[in-house]
Length: 359
Image (tube, rainbow, N blue to C red):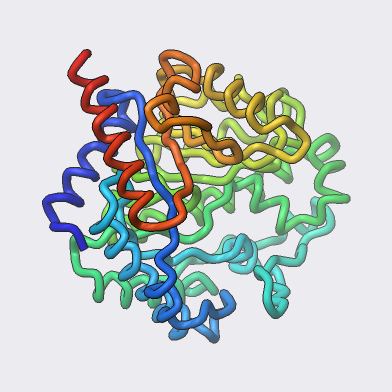
């Protein structure tokens, strides 16, 4: 792996960039290392009884990331992953989980009415199905040492988790007819999330790689907020905004991922206090280039963005200019191997140095 000093410099650059104080872009070059990757243990299903296999796979991934960081001078920081499916917090509230072979696990609804939602008990982290995730993370962090950067579990907003716990055919009606019951359950979920991540950051530190996509945060929390695509702007402000503001205040900022067609919610996202990074994935219902360039221009300089679903074309030196002026973007670009990845990275590093020297 590159020297600790090199990784530390990358972490410092990420911190300055996310906080708005350095550069107009960051970048990752994605490329295969087939020989090393073929030697990794097979990826096991994300099931609790496969925890030991999951640990070995994640550790092997970390070793490969370290080798890639050694060979290519981009901004990627090697991390130890403990990623999961979306089911984990719903499971802690009593949802059954379907675990199909060859696919991601997912939660089955446990609530079908406001009365059932009100009776649902708020779990305690250490006594819940979440506890084994700390056992896995403890072992990975022990191997990586105190300087290891962790990637946490899949994190969704409280309301997104409510949409897993509560059958949607009833939930959508309840948001109109029994909003207090919906908000009460979302608040239980918010408290569980806050307790889980307070313990996570206590154990593994507050510098981490976002749950999705791969950018670095120094403090704060990252969340997927997808259910807003099916809600009106007013419903966003009633059900989603208060919990997001609360978590931003609690942890010192937010990074948000949204893969829904949520053009009608951009203003609501932009107005969340403490929003540091926004990631929109281009939805299949939209022209990817138009949607993502539109979002970058809309959020402007104040909020860094990592748009996924469209890659700039042409020479690497032109890539930052293909985004709206004044924006701050995290670029991802593919390469077919180490040599081409290293060459692209060197060209982008040289461009960034020239731009920063010019002021």
